[in-house]
Image (cartoon, rainbow, N blue to C red):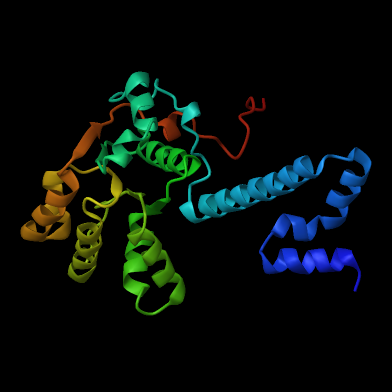
Length: 254
């Protein structure tokens, strides 16, 4: 067995993926550049570290389950009121995540609630946090299926270890009693351990109507509203203002 293959085997054993996959190229460049032993060792390890960091980041971004548009640099303040640029910058610094604060984004459809929530999750992932975005419907499905499928259980366990979770469109539709109990159990477990972003078009007072259980709604809100910032967004629907047609508008034929 030649030495290159031995290097690849050792790299594979040590899980040095980049060195295993690029052994020939790395050695070839060293033969041309002729670095010192110290520089070559440093370059080799640095490339492996950067590769591992990128791989880890790509994995966390994928698991975050972000919607397609989630870059808060593109936030349009002309279509909603309730937050200004200074406040947005403070939110994006994520000190509130370190302090385990929650955030409720409340307002009618199209005022940027989902975009803000997804953007803050994206910022958190960029800074190394374990952060996830989920719709209320997907979350309830995980809670229903976690005892039945490995995928749902794995997702649920990730939520339990998260630094930040965004739940989109909570209480949009009525939910069953056992689903509400499962949701409460999750929120109760995350209480003071994980920051939660809630987007909703209903006020906390309306949650009891959606749950059809005032006691459970009160207990749920008690955990969420403790150390929580409520931001009320108002304005026109961005989607309706910027909707696109399938067919181009053409002058009427005469």
